[in-house]
Length: 313
Image (tube, rainbow, N blue to C red):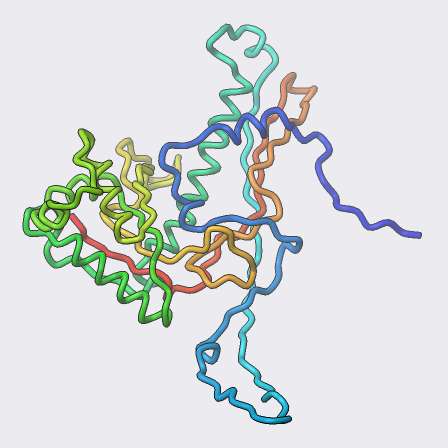
């Protein structure tokens, strides 16, 4: 009788995988915007409910009348996980000559995890930070960089817009680049809005007060400090100046923290494997390869669940 099996690389390095899991890149936001969850199939379907789910039915019955049979419409869309991976070679000779605090295997793992995570951050940003994809957008008229900026009005307008577009969902998360947050808390509107509220602490760190203010709106805030180069390495232009990946854009969105294939949310990331580390001995080169590997899809589920504010400062 034939056997069904899952073909895997046998030399999985559990130690390096566990150590890399504990390594956190500063202010990583990809998981915040597009939460991941495991799926069985690399490609499959997910459910999209259309507006028929909000139909008002007359369900009155009397006596021995049987209940009315109803039906609603549902659409199916597809996801397809893609493979991503990179590797670093560590030679036996260099490792033998390395002394503390230089630990080549651990350094290779940390940097592979960082670069692999940055690539996922960029893929999420290409979707969630695009005005061509997130069609509910607003270019800020009174930039938050000046005292006349209106961050409270702009945020509440965005929440209302999403609520109407989704027939009842309110944004529960907000992503703000740290440079934008620093300027927003200096506007007259922000300072006056919370002037008499005792539940917004006047902390020595003003960003703590800013986060507390956003939570009053029912929003879970994330301050983004994701920086990267604008070009791939060794392309025609290989810059030396880093750029804020989210620029001066602010993203308001509804997110289901623990999604499934039947969840209505802005984005999620179904995966087969995520951040797996493998170590492969290379005798002829006298060393080992450390590989990081993911099989994942960054999926836009419902663009109506998001509102993108641009040109904030």
